[in-house]
Amino acid sequence: MKRIAIPIERGKLSEYFGNCNHFEIFEIDERFTEKNRLEVPFKLKTELPNWLASEGVTDVIMYKIDKLILKMFQTHKMNLFIGVRIDYPNNIINDYIDGKLYSDDTIISEIIDDNE
Figure 1 (cartoon, rainbow, N blue to C red):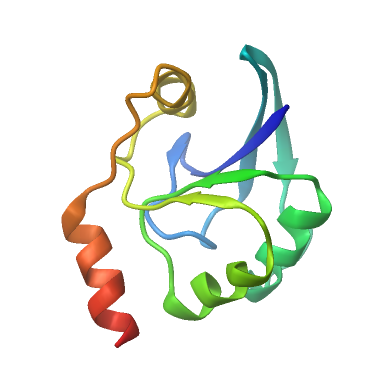
Figure 2: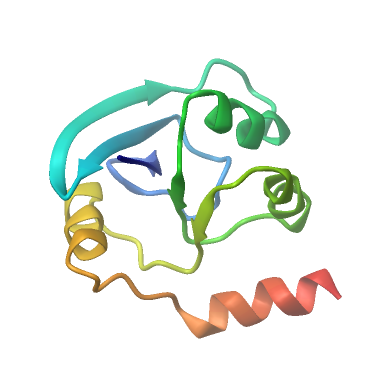
């Protein structure tokens, strides 16, 4: 089973990972099975990778991420989908399930260039 986290701000995918007020958590077993709302219990975004791992998250879908937080994910075995277009979580998860989730190469380049 996959447990996918999508950071949400104003009802859609948050522009910056860590600036969200909650995550939509989708549990997937072949097809969508369950959706839950997970409130962020603290203000420090540097705690998010460890917290998501402790919640059993296997995949995280995001648009942009700070290079420091990205490095923090390296110790966890989570799949990260970065540069995904900002949309409503149900549309994003349907694209994920259908294999149509794409990243914006410009966003990926920004993060790579920023990490050098």
